[in-house]
Structure formats: C-alpha cells, structure tokens
Length: 463
Image 1 (cartoon, rainbow, N blue to C red):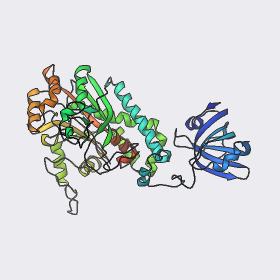
Image 2 (image 1 turned 45 degrees about the vertical axis):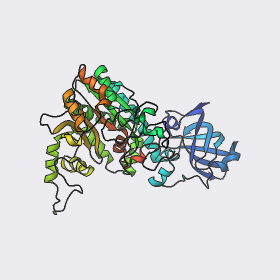
Image 3 (image 1 turned 180 degrees about the vertical axis):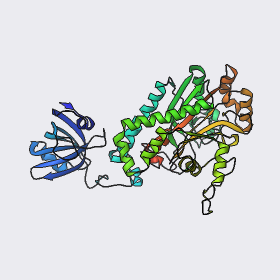
Image 4 (image 1 turned 30 degrees about the horizontal axis):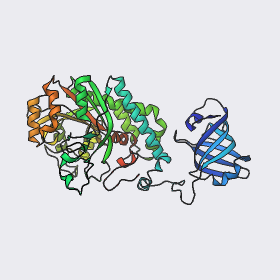
C-alpha cells in the first residue's frame, strides 16, 4: 500500500482506496464500538481524522493509542461528513508503533508556555506552533537559496574554524585540542593549527575572496558569538546569510537587500499560508499588515545623520516626557526602540539607514570622503528593528591598513585579505542577515530561542 503524508491526504482531489497513514496521535475519542483519532505527521498544521471500528486488526491496542503515541493505519480516504474537513480515513487495520505514557508525556491537549517548551526542545516541534515555525524555517531556507540562484549568485561554503576576527570585537569561541590545565595551553604554537583558532563570527571575509573571483556570491551557514547576552534577540550560535557582490557600491547593496526581503516574504506568503495564519491569529495581530508593508511599500532611505535629527526632534512625547529610554546623539549605535520609532511611527514602512559613524562600524567598511562616516547601511523593519546590516567594502589598501592599525588589529591575520586589494582590487559590497531574525520577522515571534531548533545561549547547552 502507498503511504500518504497527511498533507497529501488532505490535499487529495479524489477518494483513495487502500492507503497507509502514519503519525503521532494528537487526540483520541472513543465511543461504543469505534474511535476517532486526530493524526499529525508533521507535514502540515492540520490533523487528519482517522476512524477505526472495533474488531479491526490492531483494535486490541486501542487503549494504548494515547496522545503522543505513534501509529500506522491502513484504510481508505473518503469524504468526511464533518464540518471543516474534506477527507477522513476509515481504518481497516491499526498498528501501534510507539507508546507514549499518558502519565509522563509532557505535551497534553492544552496550551503550554514558550518557557516550558524550551525546556523540552526535543519534543516541542510536535506542537502546532513549533511545528509551524520549523516548516517555515525549512521553506525560508529554500527561498533564500532560490533568490540568489535566480539572480546569478554562486553559493560559497565559508569555513567554520578561522584564525581572524571578522568583526574585530574579540567575542569569539576559541577552538583548541589542548588541556587548559597543561603548560602547553599558554602557547598557541603548541595547538593543532600552530596558532590561535576560533569559531567564525561571519563568513564575509571568505565571501570577499570569491566575490573578487566569481563575481556575485553568498554564504549561508552557522556563525558563533561568545557575547554574554541574555536577550530575546541574541544567541551564541545562529545562521547567517551573507551575499557579496563585485563591482558594486552601497546603492547596489541597498537595492539587493530590499529585493531579497521582498522575495523571501512573498515566497513564504505563497507556500506557508496555513502556518503563517497561525501566527497572525495567535502571536501577532499586526503580522499581516507588517508583511504587506514589506511586500508593497518602497523602503524609505535616510542617512544616519538625518535619522538622528528625526529622533532628536521627536525625543519628547506630547506630554513632555522622554520618548526613548536610550538618549539620542550623533555617534550612538541606534537602539531597537529608535529603529522601531523610525519604521513604525515616522516613516510607517521599512527604512534603510546609511552612512554611519566610522567609530561604531567594522574596519572593512569603506571610509566616506568626510572622514567620519563609512558607506554602511542597515535595513530596519517594523516590529523588529534592524534585520540586515551591510556596507560597501574598503577596496583602497592604504585606507584599509590605516583602519586595521586604528582598531588595534593584528595586520598579520589579514595578509591574504590585503592581497585582494593588492591584486586587482575592485569596488565591492555585501550584507549580513541573521536567518533567525528573518524568521522572527515573518512569524511575529519575539524570542530568538523559539525559532532555532536547539538554542545555544549563556549557561544553556542542552539537546
């Protein structure tokens, strides 16, 4: 017999005889002589109703068919007389595949808090909310690759272990084979690579290698930050999408970021409509409006200096109280509350802020003619704030050398990076976007721990 996924069964155009469905029991209701089972196999949000009659093969196990148990049912897909469902399965045999003790199985038919579900991250994908999140995550990953492939970008696998700090912040996880208690651990030359090594904070520098040879490229992989941030927006391990374009400037970068966001949101709207509707109903009532704005509005573009002027002009409420918790002045790194004001209240649409002060940006960003700003840009979206950060890269070797020295970085770590400027340097630009930030944007979920399978945060390394 042919196994049908629940999604396939519910989407069938005609009745189908002699099928097999397999999945986990969401609920079971027994009447005299028969039982109704709501079955879900993770392929979609909706359950498939299965009806089994007393006397079929496997009926002797019906008492053990409890919430969380896995079963296989042979039967026929027939039209359902019940409201709200087109099809149901009339079972001709039932096989219990795996018990779930009803006294200890933690996912019963009730709403559980996100905090509780994080403690059982190995089981939470079986809930409606998290099943939907991880289906959206899967489809979003495909949408990312599709956008770049359709636009002629080559996919680059950047290294996970690195000897250089892309961001210059030093918040990196060290990689070593040495016992920390041994005398050898004091000298990196004794270690596996003969030098200090760390988990990458970004694939950008490797992407620049390939942008200056293949043209337009992108990386999409895990990155790691050893910052002790216990916030809903930070994790120690997350995934980054980082395109890099040769022969491109900051305007090209902004255009790419806007087109990319619109494409991915449009794709998910088409292919994950049922799952997204769950979040629009239960998580964020403004979600549909936010996604409509991203899809249908041109993104506003404003310089950092203009953005600061707007924030300063609106720093007080009509009642004269401070609007912002974090004071605004030229030179600060904009906070989420500032970004959300710009997108939600002032412009009422996504905003691209560009030309940031050099002192708050990384060494590789192109210095502008004013000597105090760099050709950097952030894309801000309503209800999230910053979702993309990018820049035109510094292609002038003398300026790049000065920036490395100014920030106290070791130029020996970047010898190969400088070679890209020595041998056929070209203007180039790119950006980075945290994949989890994208998922938070399209679902309305406010905690990064809830859009990644096994969250890695300070003092937390379960699963």
